[in-house]
Length: 109
Figure: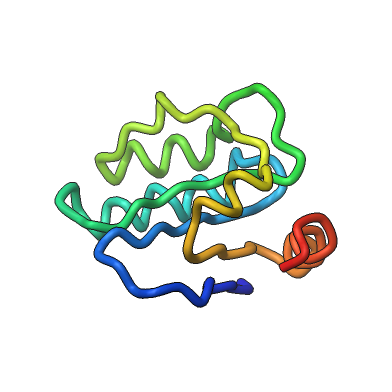
């Protein structure tokens, strides 16, 4: 994983964005796992997106694992990574080297 942290004044409402390819496997698993660990009262906002996300559903393997952990992923919709999402998040975690390179080239990070 490769991480960018924006150099901004620390606030109580930090946001984290996980990025993979389709936003149906790795980034979704990371998003929901971190949300579960942080708990509902956390000040952190956690999201995920994909560099090639298309309409669809979470991969069945991830969906089943999340359900077994007591997490309901049924509301998830794959989300395409945009400049707006990049700008809205304080910490961006690329799930692979190719994702990092894409983000650097496309969004200048």
